[in-house]
Length: 248
Image 1 (cartoon, rainbow, N blue to C red):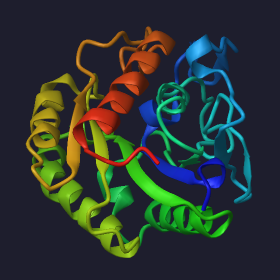
Image 2: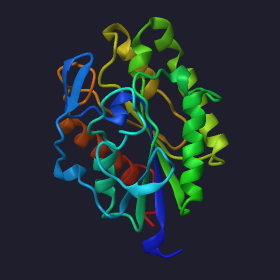
Image 3: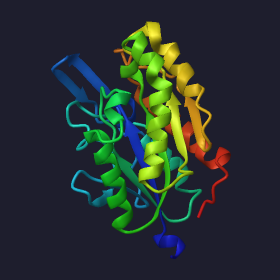
Image 4: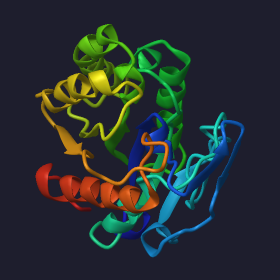
């Protein structure tokens, strides 16, 4: 396969900070709007595609998850700044497969659940339609698991099982996974417990990017547009420099 037609496929999964709430203006619980601002780091490019809800490849543009995470208003996430940071360093096309759904707990991503099965199906279709290689899973989730101490205590075991199940079902035992350590949570009492679990996972080819300290929206849960750009670039840097992967 020539460089021009090679496709690097990246899975974008987790909950709302992966699907993106950057630029969301919240007037009330039922009245929210995206401000429509697309910074240069998030602009579409002919070499960046997304798999839409109808399982077809199309030009990727913000909001990447608009037809996937349909229960809430989506804005800017880390996917486009990640892809734009990579595109000049990799040979071929970048294929983004958005799968994240807001407010989803880790238990809702267990093997056999609707979210898990939908993600695996979308990834397999992504490879089938146009070929390419699944290059990595980008994962940002865990805010919903800060709700209770029991949820937080169970997170590490559930996340490790999720990783093993995804790798098995995609037949990729060394699939690179870049997860994000939380910047926020629904219950401040247990944010650090979940962060410790995320930072403590030592499985091979699993790396963690720390979002702590990144700017949040006024809701103190979701990353701002500026923060999402920073996060996407941080994840790209980890992919390029820490996984020792070929660039073509």
